[in-house]
Image (cartoon, rainbow over all chains, first blue to last red):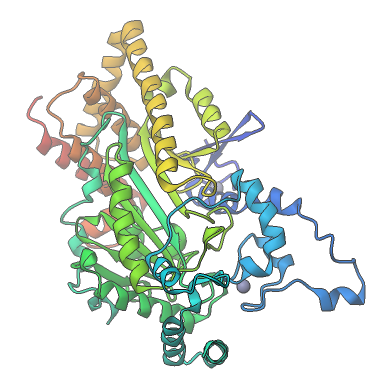
Length: 173
Length: 363
Ligand SMILES: [Zn+2]
Ligand SMILES: [Zn+2]
């Protein structure tokens, strides 16, 4: 049996795809299967869900849209690119695209409520934080952590990030 | 030299002297479940995700991780491999041992891999997420794998600041992992469900319950040898322990179905089943040239024969180890040189004959 995709090599991987309870079989060589699998990882469900998310806030083809391009303030990822490739660029993307992600996460997981564990550091930060005043969403707001991050940014000669961190620290101090 | 950061520096060649603990072929339901794996994805708050990071950032993450590992006693004696410092065959070897992904091997820049002694824990650094922590156990043992990974995650989270939101949990590059960022997978051997043509029904039911099934070699594929890897798909709306319980519940049902199918095969046509098993064993012990595909199919039959008491005196562990050893990079490392496809088929047959000959004292 030869590979269904390249038609050259011997098919050694037999793939069953189940879409809407319809089963289809594919016979692939190892190389094509590997490509197909990374494609599927990306596409499986996610692409469909992403395609269903139209950006209603943005008027098409107008000059206005350039200014209003939805973009992550930290890593610069444009929302359109997230829709295309399905990958977020940093933790801050979750805040930048919060409105869109709320629905998407619910579609993917059937829920958007987190019920898992909390990292040790975060627990410590919560214990240290004053009871009133909503705690920040990300655990980065611990001053000593920010300072540590600043040091590693300087060590890595990432001065752009260092500048951002320095400003954050100033704001807290 | 990053290899020294984690303490003892292990050479890749040393991996060949033994195989992962998860291949020992024992543990709960080991007659049907080969291994259990739990994986957690974690990102460091201070850096953008690997896909959005340049070389400098990736290296800084690797360095910060290495330093954190040094302070964690549970990771003493592990080795941190820097991907750019090992060659392609060695990277392939790590993939073949299920310690890391194909993606991790194909683009080595800024990437690392931590492996503990016995290969129970491995941590990919700078794959899709900064950290992909994995624990493998033999048999149906997700709870034990979870306990181990939970301890390591706790230790890491005291040293490193993970990207986390109370409302959405751990933040990952792909929204399909957001939340617990946990995937529990179980590698099942389901030959009787395949032979009785019930496997598609079972797989369809699994996908309906939002669990995914994959093959032994390569993600997203249903490889040969009647091996199926079943894992959870959702990571929000359930706690880690809930997810593990759900997988366990599903796996127990599949085990029951496979057991029934095995009994049905015995009742319907015992001589044919015995013939199939024994011929497979005979072929493995005598073949001079064998492809990996053929070998895996024969292994599956021998394994079934062992689990059903048709064959005795074959070591489960030896059989499990062969699954790993017959892959291209392993064969080339054992031989100590590059082998073309034909040479590999010859070497593979020799390795199988030697291993099965040693572990059997009949015929
Ligand atoms: Zn092909
Ligand atoms: Zn971002």
